[in-house]
Amino acid sequence: MEPDNQTWVSEFILLGLSSDRHVQVSLFILFLIMYLVTVLGNFLIVLLIRLDSRLHTPMYFFLTNLSLVDVSYATSIVPQLLVHFLAEHKAIPFVSCAAQLFFSLALGGIEFILLEVMAYDHYVAVSNPLRYLVIMHAGLCSKLAIASWVSGCMNSLLHTAITFQLPLCTNKYIDHVSCEILAVVRLACVDTSSNEVAILVSSIVLLMTPFLLVLLSYIQIISTILKIQSREGRRKAFHTCASHLTVVALCFGMAIFTYILPHSSPSALQEKLISLFHAVFTPMLNPMIYSLRNKEVKGAWQKLLGRFSGLTSKLVSV
Image (cartoon, rainbow, N blue to C red; front, side, top):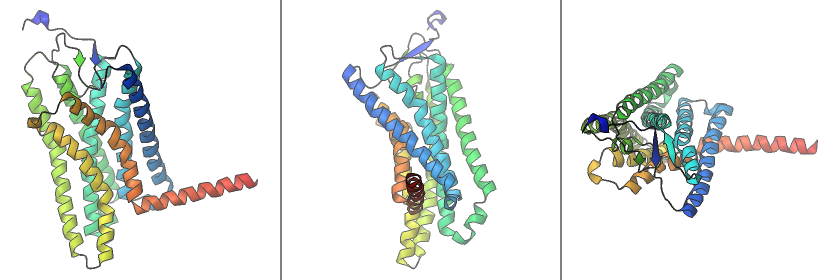
């Protein structure tokens, strides 16, 4: 291709989910509600953990990090999506597109590593409960959390740099709901095999490695649970891990389908739905999963609501 034909675009056009105006308005209302529920649910989880001293443990420290990641992930995509549902010209500037790709990719990587760290935390809690707080001390928890954030951001920075240095020629229509890395790479008018290899390697390091470590942790957890003599003890140990295992299945399942199984060749619509699943559905469901299936969290909610009801009664009586 001649160098003269290789130009840099100043903005991209996101094709989104639908071109029908009535459908877009309906989707705007739906995703606005879901986004508000996501933000409210995750911030309530963070607030609850902050206010209840019984939840000041390593498990809930990592859950706080996960909630912050979920809110940030949703915010990196959904507000722009909502604007485009109502806008006639669905453009996103080059810099904004690069920023969106960086944050969504970074936060996705952070979430996978955090889920692996939480699996290790559960393993220690089940296999060595008497030394749990000694092993999972504050210093180690802080280092694991920082390592998760730094690893995700460094990986994303690398991919954002190598993706947006590609000559995109006159291609500016992204058949997606956001600046997702695979959708942007497809716009390049040069061979992108090296980028695709880099994405695969990154997926193996930041997706498959945490996934395999999660599996290893749960193999050890199940082995330990089966050795517990009392039925109540086994039930309690399994219940401790149930919420986390549910979230792991949701997050890793979709990601592996998208990035590790290229032979499955998901359609453009499937890719959009998978992206929305990670950006909207999972962040919205996580607080519900941890609230409904976690006895300690439910107890903390009841305690907080009891305080609120008591305070309200006093104010009314005054």
